[in-house]
Length: 137
Image 1: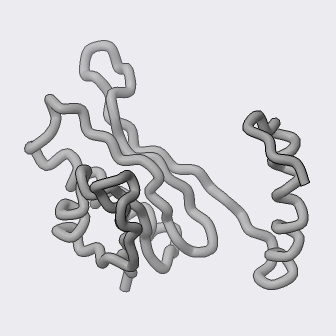
Image 2 (image 1 turned 90 degrees about the vertical axis):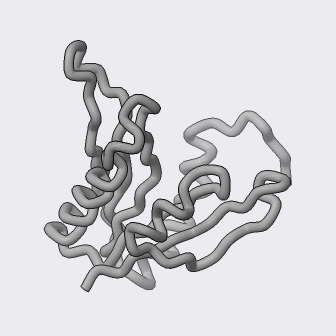
């Protein structure tokens, strides 16, 4: 055994290889499809926020949701989540899952119909990390 705080991409892949092989024996080859719903500045066309995630195993995972301050309280986040849900349905997903911190947006996700499926207390200290899902009918 060796502890490293400077793990290379190749070493990560070497660790992942037997896990992928094991998983494949149980559930088949796992395909990942990245998806982004981009918010762009109307003048410069630079990306200023949006949603980034991936589809695998019949679920859309929302890894990132970012709405710039000047676009908040205008329904932008809600529109992003509606677009993600429509995309997930189009791709035949069972549901959507994500995580968020207590100081971020757990109330927002509950308003969008997500249910808490777990949390970690004191991650970071004094806060919680929440895990949510929304099953699609």
